[in-house]
Amino acid sequence: MKLSAFKRALWVYHLPTGSCNGCDIEIVAALTPRYDVERFGIMLVGTPRHADVLLVTGTVTRPMADRLRRIYEQTPDPKAVVVVGSCGSTSGVFYESYNVAGPVDEIIPVDVYIPGCPVRPEAITDAVVKAVAKLEGLEAGEKV
Amino acid sequence: MNLLTGEGFWSPLVWLALAVGVALLAWWLRSKGRQDYKRGTEQATPFLSGEPMPEGVHVGGQHLYWGFVEALRPVVDRLRAFHSGVVTDYVTWLVVMLAVVFLVVMLS
Image (cartoon, rainbow over all chains, first blue to last red; front, side, top):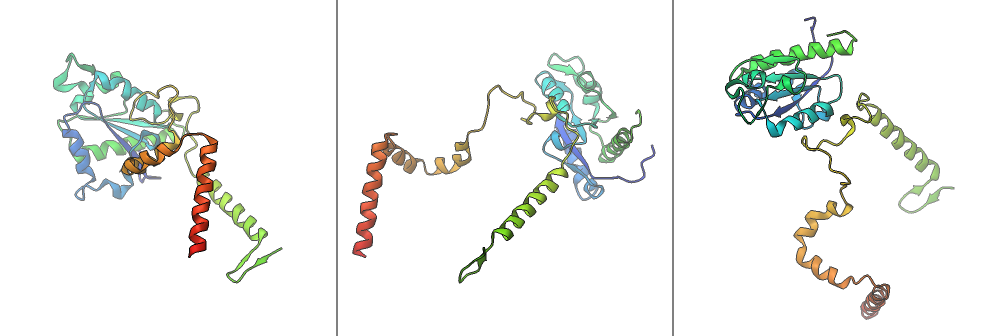
């Protein structure tokens, strides 16, 4: 990873697709003064139309599958998808449950996975930085 | 060409220069926006929390006043009852209200 400094602020859209809220709370924790990711220019936005990174939490329930796909398509390119937590990565304890459409990567392409139940804020920050590196590579025309 | 009053002046050239300045500012602000949306894809559709865009949906102008209308519902309902949609009724109201205004002005 060649990233040394952010070239611009990174806007993140947080999308819960069936989470128990454990990972969502950890995302909020990453914004609190202890971790304070906004000092790096990383901030949550209210619409994917403004986002560079999609932060997806939870396994994908059946009603959310279409909405997840649509929100991914509505996010402008270049974009990166970060899956937060074990449920989104593998379906976790909901594996093959009747009301689960699958882990996130069965619905949309995923760039970074963060395992954990729930994940730690340091891991979220690290994953977003990895996503930035990918985005900067895409913007520079590299094949990532 | 300038119009001088006790409070200031009005010049069409100054007005034009201001209009051009505002237009340039608006163009500059717009040019700072993202250019990488792909036309004809979902990226160009409104974001409705992931819901599909319903066919033929638009937000009517009256929705801008929805809060006012709901807050003043009793008054609005009474005023609406006066609005028959017939032009002669409107003209009658105009004449009556003008007569009232004239009376008030003459008596004061």
